[in-house]
Length: 299
Image (cartoon, rainbow, N blue to C red):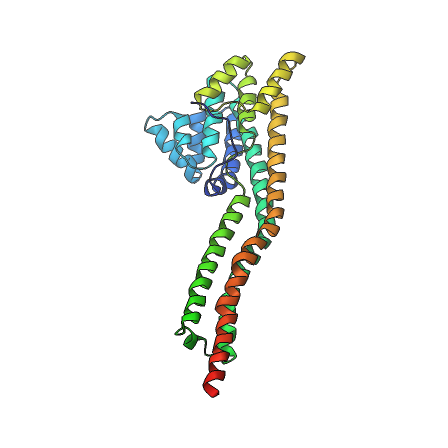
């Protein structure tokens, strides 16, 4: 079953991807342009100390197909394996394919960096505010209130339990909001990139779609619109598809920054619904109860 490429992979995989993979792809492209055979190029990279090329070369020596050996790696190596498989199947230039993949990876990583920077401030603020109830308890102890004694009172114990539950709820709620705002993994516009690789060898659109299906990728709706435009206008689709892929990466960056901007206001919900009531129940209520108990004992 084929799938439309979505920018949804785990953040851990994406973080392990672009920063390390793109430079390796660039060096590999240089070696291929110099006329070195693919297996020999991977051997040179393995000898240079890069861990992923070393593992790929070891699996290749064990008799595993090169595309499968690349796909066995985590993160963006899976996308690289798909591009490698498409290029070798249709006879597209490998060096140009790898340079294009390296550029796409750098764009995707730059977008994730922008989003992470935008998320840093609201995320740090949410974590800091989450500790307010415990700060209130420490302040009450410094002021001399016998907060611990109030826990023996049914009302004090109830305040502690409800406040603790609210703190946990605020923590879980905040984590989910932050997780939704974080960038996804993978490379936006990857299906367009793969189509451009396939068509750059001169195969027909139908053949290019068959090759993409062999790596379990289906063209997105925007890709099909580009293919229809290319057919109607009688112009090559390769440049149009690469422009579409760049546009997808640009949109992903803007959407991610918008999610980060919206996160600031959305974090007010757990603050108002959970954190502030927990602050009152854990910090303020025991102080009031302690003062009332002390006054009644004095009287």
